[in-house]
Image 1 (cartoon, rainbow, N blue to C red):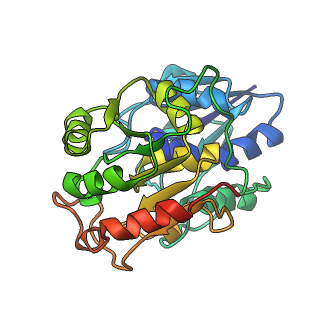
Image 2 (cartoon, one colour):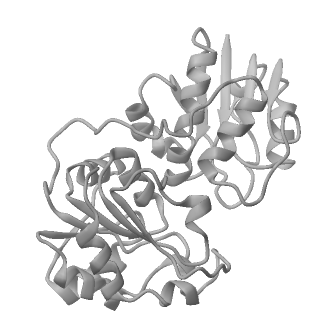
Amino acid sequence: MRLVVLRALGLGDLLTAVPALRALERAFPEHERILLAPAALAPLVELIGGAVHAVADVHGVRSPPAALPAVARGADVAVNLHGRGPQSTELLRAARPRRLIAFGEQAPWREDEHEVERWCRLLDAAGIPADPAELGVRAPPGAPPAPGATVVHPGASAPARRWPAERWAVVARAAPGPVVVSAGPGEAGLARAVAGRCGARVFRGSLLDLARLVAGAARVACPDTGVAHLATALGTPSVVLFGPSSPATWGPPPARRQHRVLWAGRRGDPNADRPDPGLLAIEPADVLAALLSAGRA
């Protein structure tokens, strides 16, 4: 028996789907559970535990995947955690699963809903109880590269969510030390721009190395990006800067008091080619105050 789950997105998208993946593990314990997602996320998937047995490489960050791997064909159960459809749902339907779970099939899509709760609601509607609080993942094995550090991660996939480098440098200069500036793929230049202004060192490594860094950090400051969800999943205190998107849809759960969110209350285009005006309304003093108040619950 085989269950396939489509979530061919990024790091934050994977981590917001953890409660749904755990619910599917409980509901289908005898099934081989395969996640259709970018292969680069496989090391992080292992930190979830036994929810997923294997990752089959699929990419669909900018648009629905063009095709699914052969392992998706004829599955006993196919679950669309990728989006509202119809493209992603039709792609799974074309693979001829015996059972399909997707928005439009079991439940209607709601626009203003937290990403974690969205997928749990879908499974609940399909008769599969899911708990949005089950967000945690285990720390990766191995020693953390900078234990007790303040990690500043300035990068984000879209310019709309990137706070200016000079502001991050102001925060890094005054934050409790040591301070490490981390960089994801394609973000090394931005990280160097921040580090060069404040004398901090730049950390670059694999996705698993980044998880080790965050797991061992005293605190993390970052925009609304995958590292924010990594801090939530690992229980590391964090300060997350929101601009075009609301923390009510993508932020850490309010009950997790070791996390702080900063948002000017304005919505905008999350894919715009310049920093969102609401993001620019946040000042370094705001971030520093939040960093000093963030602590482990």
